[in-house]
Length: 202
Image (cartoon, rainbow, N blue to C red; front, side, top):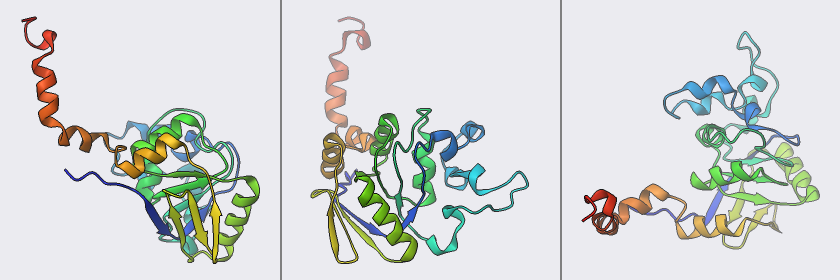
């Protein structure tokens, strides 16, 4: 199985303003009973997007001008609260391939890395400027360079930050643990044969 290395991402962006947006807001708890993650994209920010009668409310994820956006722009402490992996799953399955923000909850960030979703960190001024750009230019692309930790938009190149271990995992392709295991099946079998509790303690 081919190991996917993630070094560059480009696409239009969608801003979701607000600090401390927790995983309950990203994906309501009642949808955790789903057996698979397949439909999780339908539930992203559900209770903020729809009322009790399923009528649409005003929310960036409902705004047609952001249709096709693949980069999410957020503020401070995004993904705090419960450690549920359904939150990044719902964002990814909605169509988001990368997130840029001021800061992220640690467990949420780890879950994103395991899905191959880069998280880039900027200061308040950088993020506010980027949000205003996306609001005024919803179809304009943002280019993300994971190796250099930069983004490019409107003829500007902005230096951001990333968690070093997440950056290395994405660039080297080690974020995909399933592919790593399948590509090392022979080595796993060798280790298995030498484990006494799997071989009657011989």
